[in-house]
Structure formats: structure tokens, C-alpha cells
Image (spheres, helix red, strand yellow):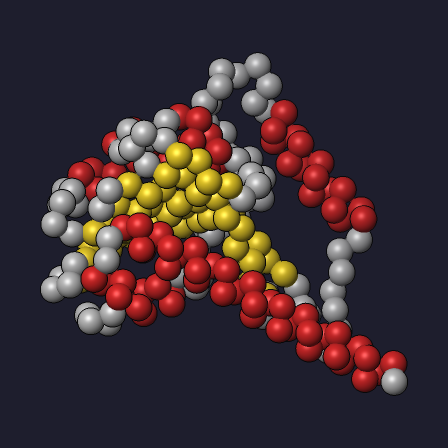
Length: 218
């Protein structure tokens, strides 16, 4: 098995691209929404799940107005946005849920460090998701995942469409599972735990590469 490393020049090209996009914001008021980061091919796609112990409903969201009809204090609502190319969608979601413009700015600036910020009505979390690109020789992929935790509501913002949250969807199928019994805070915890679990998958793969290298050199 071969390991693929990125050269210093490739890292410099990536850093230069991020700096160029960040430079687009120079002179603009704080809170101005501009997407900064890698441009993924994923189009914006919104999905929503509402659940309780007795209920599990999947929604395909075609417009922001569809989200307004989902407000239900009897159910936990999880809204996920795959793709950050449509800034208007992010802005309108933020407006509907009364999210501060500076938080929306951070969501679209995908070079953020992992963090947790507490606001009056919600928590804002940033974490990096990593995975292996199975179509290439040992190549890591990563993306920024932003999480807004509100009372009875969780909103996740991902850079692209992938299978990161598939385990969470699987857990929700279990009517008697702990996830269906608890609130939005536990959903946010399970989402974070699922993202971190992928770190260990990558770590195990790195161990295999190192062991293979040792055997080759022996």
C-alpha cells in the first residue's frame, strides 16, 4: 500500500486560495456573508428529520418556507444543509431562527478552528470531519461541520454531501434507542461522537500503512 503526501507547493497553493477568498472581505462590514474555503461540487441540499419516541418523519426541503411548517415543540427537529454554495439559503435559515450574522459568517468561513460558543438562545459548535477517499491511494478528505443547538432543534451545516451522518440516521431507526428518548442536546452529542468516531477509522488505516512500511523495510 502506498501513501500519498501533499507537497509544500500544493499546501502553498491551498493557503493562497484561502487568503485570496478572505481578501474579498476586506472593507466589507462585519457579518457580510461570503463563502471562504474549498469550492465543492455539492449543490445546496436541505433535509429535515423530526422525531419523538413514537414518531419519525423524514422531510425533503425544497424551499426555506418549508422549514416554517416544521416548528413543533412536541418533536425534536434536525435540519441538515449539505453544501454551502448558496449563501442566500444560509442567510435565510439564520434569519428564520434568529441566528447572529457573525455566526453565519463563521459557518461560511470554513477555515475555522474547532470551537464552542454560547449565545443567549443557542450553542454554536465547529468541528472538522475527516475521512479517507476510497477512490484514491490513501488520501485524506476533511470538511468543516457547524452545529447549532437550540431548544428542540439542531441545525448542521456541511461543506458537501457524504455519508458522515449515516450512523445517526441508523440510530434514529431504533424506536427504543436512547436517541429517540432524549432531547436535542443528546442529538448534538451523537452527531459529534459520530464525527469523532471517523478519526479512529483514519487512525487504524494509518497504523496499517506504518506496519506495512515496517514490513517492507525489515
